[in-house]
Length: 306
Image (tube, rainbow, N blue to C red; front, side):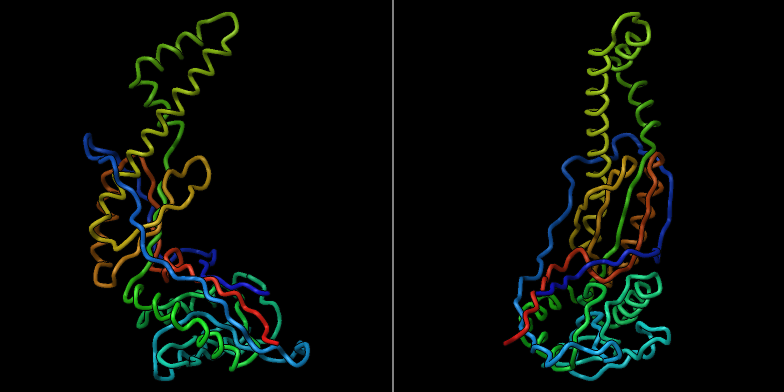
């Protein structure tokens, strides 16, 4: 049994700025947070069993994404391959898979291959709402893809309707932890006094250091939550939904994705830049637009039919 899922490939960013900014007093608003968006449902799909194991030189169909279209579409030579493969569509009713021919081998996630996968999705999404497929999704035949579209038609159609004319933007926020700790020590009298006691004691300072560590951790958590809530609140009225992912490393305090309507893209872009100018002590990494990787949750369990 093989599984495919909509998953964002790792790669270099399309749009990024890193900006250091200060928080004016009173600008943070508590209670902010991600706004949930409806997601796709699970579908089970049966595909015909191959008559024999594929030869290394046989061709299959690489699937990049799903779109809504009744008319055949051609996107030119953009696909995977040393010579970029021609990208076209395979249809069932009013939905279609965007595909190219590919050898029936496991596609390695090299930089060139991942960028080709991404390039196709980015090209298609300029004029179409897309459901991105995970890297390396390959079917043996044209009929197998039609069976995929037929079996998962309701799920695909539902998600395409919900994601119509919407993009994803990524926003990561980082801080200099040591700088923030120094500020907390300067601002909090209890922490400042405890640090002074630790530095002046001649005997064991174990319990004092434990208490100091707990106070610092609590203060960092509280400050981080205020910053993140303020940023989510500031972006709420220019986005459809948002999702908070787990921060990576000690410096990152926010790792979020935002679903933005096509006609709100400029407003969202301007708002992010405004926020970046307000928060002097934070670094913003802003990327997009992307297909809605974080807002599509269709997992296809592909089973060979007997």
